[in-house]
Image (cartoon, rainbow, N blue to C red; front, side, top):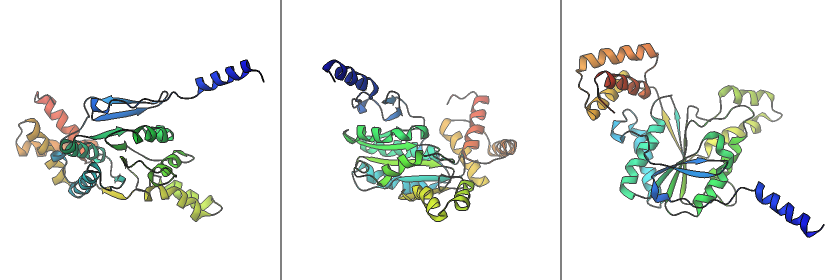
Length: 279
């Protein structure tokens, strides 16, 4: 093979290979979003979050996540965390609020969001963060897997497998409506159809076992629901008497057929708009 052919092959391979990524300026923002094709970290100038004090009914999860995050920010051992449970009960809001609260104290803690569909690229992201200064919470919201979805294999190696392991300056937080990250019918199907049912099920549910902390979120009581709204009103200066708030908020939840932190915020948004208050 002559030198000309070798040169053309080398040039073609160079075009196909992803360009090496420069470490971004992590001082430019407190949050970043990971994108692929091409690989890059986009800074988020203002993270969309509420103050930690406005999250009602999640005291135990709040305290555990705060302590774990403080340990991590101080360079001490910390666990990966799975926040699972009822929809709209503040799982992702808690992650962002805790990051904001801890970052006010240490100033070097960054929140990096990765989408579920981009999990196959997580190894490349970790290689980028491994050489960076500071500490990073890698955050995946609404993490779950369906039948024939192999993305979970990319995540398993990152959580505590592989010869390189997770970088010391990275911890992984994820939210999910499912405790085992997979629908129950998918697990039952594995039990009924696999040659070795126990091994097939273990392969899939073992992913959630790799999170050191599981924090459960459950539907809120009516008192907590009303307390959430009252907290928003006080924080944003929306004047409304307790009797009117109670009547309107209960009617709002009945029209939605649900009661959660998300529904409370949606009612408050409507109320603030009617009262002419900007959020």
